[in-house]
Image (cartoon, rainbow, N blue to C red; front, side, top):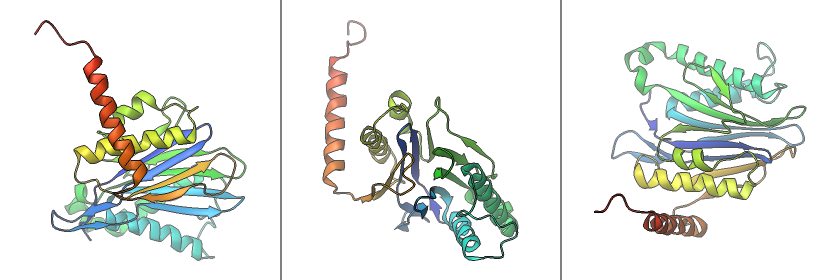
Length: 251
């Protein structure tokens, strides 16, 4: 099994107005083998559902899970009749992805046992299916999952520690979508500055509550004018804030 690792950073932030998703695109199989792979996967049936899946971990493992989900959609004889495009709730979608992950693990059990740490994966699943509100889940390598709440409105997978502090301090369910997108990009800026295994471009998607269609979807490149301006303004704001905080002691 391939050892390419998607040393990634992905975020999903659930708001009253919808959900904002973002993922980087860097993978590596060693310092001299860096590539760009999409880690955001979308299933859209307008007026019925929008389902977004972000992936992190071993690239072969995550691609196998996505491929299995796609095969189920294309196979009318799937065992229980449930696919990512026919399940009636997001909870069922999370169960489906957890089951697919377990199946891929079983198919590669021998190699996984030898290098379990190298063959792990995690996912952020979010979106809305007609008949219920938007929902957001984090799915672990074992196939189990948890759901976002008002107290914990966002999930991160991959190299999350650098971008987490600003999300912890600022993220609120009542935020406007533009505010939330700015916040997520700032968390990416912090991560990119501190961890070389995370790299641009960044895939962004905004889903607005009850629209049942993909809203804004874009790829932000290294030289994107808004991101460059955002990064520069944030650095300056941090320096100014630091300068205005009272110093410690008399030294």
